[in-house]
Image (tube, rainbow, N blue to C red; front, side, top):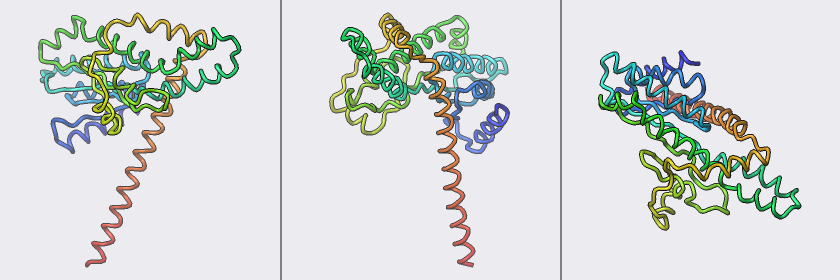
Amino acid sequence: DVEKTIEEGKRLHEKANRPNLMLKVPATNEGIEAIEELVACGMNVNATLVFSLEQYEKAANAYINGLRRFAEDKGDVSKVRSVASVFVSRIDAVVDKALEELASKEKDPKRLKEINFLKGKAAVTNCKLIYKKHLDLFSTDGWKDLEKMGANIQRVLWASTSTKSPSYSDIKYVTELIAKNSVNTIPDATLKAFMDHGVIKEAVTSDISDVQDVTHGLIKCEIDINEVLKKLLEKGVASFEESFESLLNTIEKKTEKLESKVKASR
């Protein structure tokens, strides 16, 4: 709901009254509209649950358009921050399962090798495509005009970066996604593992020449990556909604207990 999301964003912004408050808004079609409006009001936004390249492009443009509107209203664009949260490991979890099913039925050794090559590559390939779009969008003349006013680049944030498969490196989604102007929300166990045996080396750049083998391979396997990403978004929104409802229910129960104690003490 676009209007209710905007209304709630404004309410929370006023209620918290802190310059570093960042509002988390899912990058659905409705969420994209809300993101632009909230940024246009000078608020910090985390465009979350980004899975596809299309979603990312819309989220980035919502931030840029919102900043432009804020600047036109004489707002100080240097005080506005944003990230676009791209979800990673869940993609491999789904694609790898489909690849394993294909591999279990394949008799041709050459074809089997091609299928196995694709395992663990869909997620990072998707991220590389998104990062290339990020570099393109934040190097246009329109963005440079905003940058001259002090605008902050919307950073790409890699989310869900713990390794799900035991056959992969425990720091796979950290090592393979080190890139300029990016953030990685690393879980504690993954952070400790990286501090123990990780190497800091830039891994994602504007060069995406290696992604074609993966994208073509998935097409050959008849795996519709866009459909995979669409379903992950739907599940993600439902999961976020359930978590939020659970949080509110917990607060309500604790509030009722406190009220009962207060009444009893009287």
